[in-house]
Amino acid sequence: MWFWLSLIALLCWSGSDLFSKIGCQGEDDKLSHLKMVIAVGVVMGLHAAYEVFIGGVEINPGGFVTYLPVSLLYISSMAIGYLGLRYIELSISSPICNSSGALVAVLSIITGTALLAPAQYAAMALVCVGVIGLGVVEAREDDDLRLKRQEAGNYRYSKSALALILPILYSVLDALATFADSKVLETRNEDRPHCA
Image 1 (tube, rainbow, N blue to C red):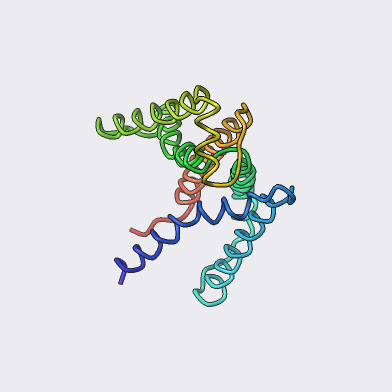
Image 2 (spheres, one colour):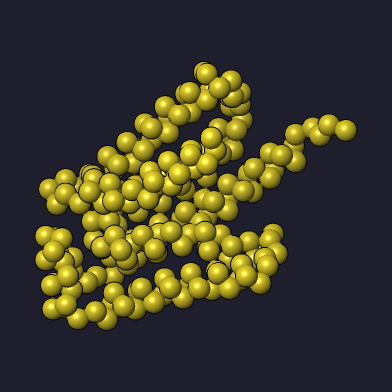
């Protein structure tokens, strides 16, 4: 059963970028990125309600307060990521945004909280090189070639620093949120009494 649920999750997650792009692309709707954040919040809220009322998960008010800064980082990164989709092509934005996992590994190394295997260091380096390479290619691409490529999508993007800054900012905020998330969970696990 877990295998089929994993495949369903993979298919849904792989389509999320496409539907996010469609939802945030409207030129007339300046608040489309915030509407996307609200839509995601409603779905996650419904899931939380299911877990609490049907799944029997305990609610701890102290946990809400402790986790609030982490939630704000995640929500801010999401809003910035959706806003960025208005200014840059998905094929460039998505790899930059999804490099946040490599940034979490960098934060773990800097803070001394994780020791990685050599293959993990190599993978992290490849992700960083890839993101920098995408930025260089985006900045140096010929304007005529860009326009020809974008004609097929019937949507034109112009070169701008904002187009690259927003996905990078998303990645940094998401990495900080993930890193803080792990720290909060570690702290909460240490506070719980352990059974002998």
